[in-house]
Length: 57
Image 1 (cartoon, rainbow, N blue to C red):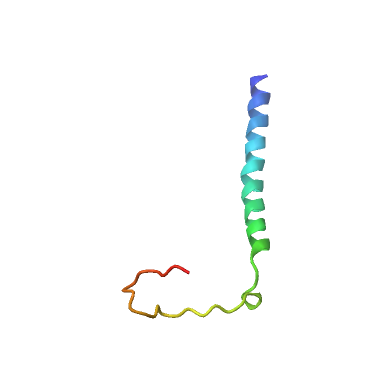
Image 2: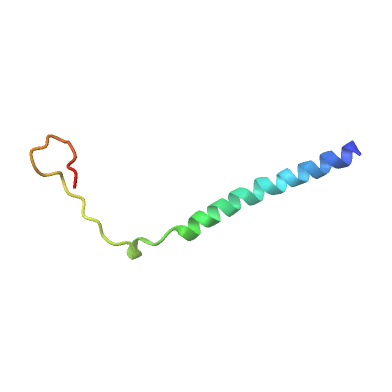
């Protein structure tokens, strides 16, 4: 009885170790959009004399 339980437990964890990262990375890969689909964002240096503090809008 104990041997069968340990075998089943080892098989279940082995399957989880393989499938969970595979599913995780698959979801990440599917969520990525190619750079051509993303709008260009202009990054500019801060302007004004606020000495590095952010302004509220």
